[in-house]
Length: 253
Image (cartoon, rainbow, N blue to C red; front, side, top):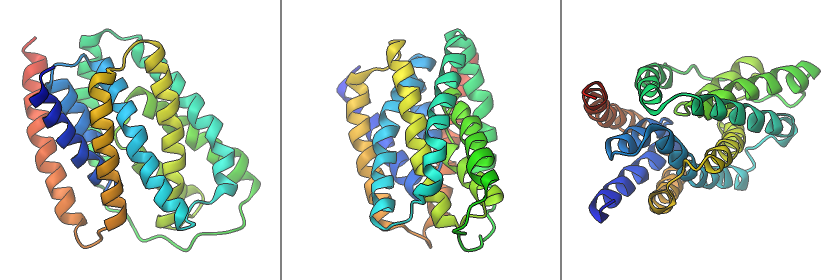
């Protein structure tokens, strides 16, 4: 791949990392970008996982520094996130490349809708978790969303945040922080599975991973609240252009 294309992908990856740390939905930019660069769908998903690990790790470190991660709950879901993502990744690898591309195109608009659903203000985080919270809701949620993350990916953080405030009553900041723990775990499980299947391009993955890390770091440090509307509007515009181009290219085959 020529240097200009790699540079453009790196810039888009930076934007994806920044948006993902502030508003969520970074994969909605990076996955279509990789597909439009001519990368096979399953390889695009695998390479995206490699890059996403770095951006998610950066955001998680910032949450940990501020003491926002509730480790009491995190410990009960880690293994289930990894297990779900490995199963989801193995499932997507069963499909041929053309079918995988069409699955991605069909799922992208659904993910956009969920990502941009209005989020109600949450109650304060609870400190006393029930046995259902520990042994039922957390493992079940992590398994289901982990499977989705391995099978496709974009919007995983949004699904986790919804789940943790609906079922455990977590405050938004705690739900966001703990979602990064499980998202990182499912990213890692999915990445290893893709890597073992030889579906990761490291020559492209390394520069876009560095760019994603930088974007995630800047976005999580800024923690822009008033700018979220602008960021989400920008995400919609970029996604719309990529999505229309992607549909045209795939259905022209």
